[in-house]
Amino acid sequence: MHKNALSVLAAGVTLALAPGIANSAKAGKSAHASKVVSSKQLERGRYMVLTGHCNNCHTYGYSSKQGNVPEKDWLLGSSPLGFRGPWGTTYASNLRLTVRNFTAEQWVKYAKSVKPRPPMPWWPLRDTTEQDLAAMYQYIRHLGPAGEPARDYVPPDKEPKPPYETRRLVQ
Ligand code: HEC
Image 1 (cartoon, rainbow, N blue to C red):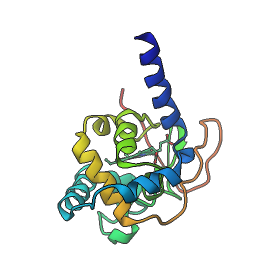
Image 2 (cartoon, rainbow, N blue to C red; image 1 turned 90 degrees about the vertical axis):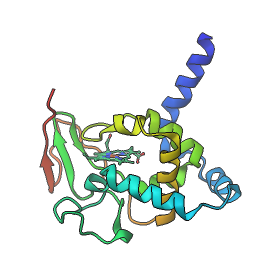
Image 3 (spheres, rainbow, N blue to C red; image 1 turned 135 degrees about the vertical axis):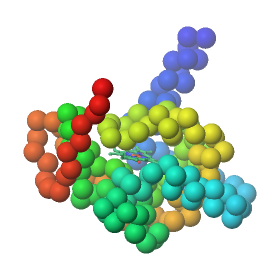
């Protein structure tokens, strides 16, 4: 039992720390093998992305333009904008590149266990149903890969390049 718990934990940690090195060839193959994605699922995924506020941080300019960013530019990451606080400076990732590394099943597991640094609210993702996470995955994949990876995390003792906004965590 201990052994099982440990290997589950180890698998989770590997995924959380190294999404970029997931086997993308394998992911691509099984995405092809999976059944055709329904328009209902895409619609649901789009709705989940909108009401999950993902664009507010993962789409540059989305908050300042009050959502007025064309859909083709959604979820390409917050870069160059960083979020600076006691945790250092973080950049919301390019989710359209992230999903390329996962099958739908892997994404659901990852989304339920990943704990990125602030201000990423990971707990609502953990609490989202598997069905809705899978719909989000299909929608983000449907947008297609584009853009660049986010800027690298900057530790608290280093000065980030502008632009960044300063955030505090209410404890
Ligand atoms: C308040 C801002 C904010 C919101 C809202 C937000 N994120 Fe994030 N997210 C971030 C930041 C910043 C990071 C990078 C944190 C780090 O460097 O550890 C991140 C990281 C992530 C990661 C891990 C990195 C990766 O691409 O694998 C995932 C997955 C993710 N976010 C998904 C989502 C999804 C899906 C939503 C909407 C349901 C969402 N985020 C909403 C700010 C946000």
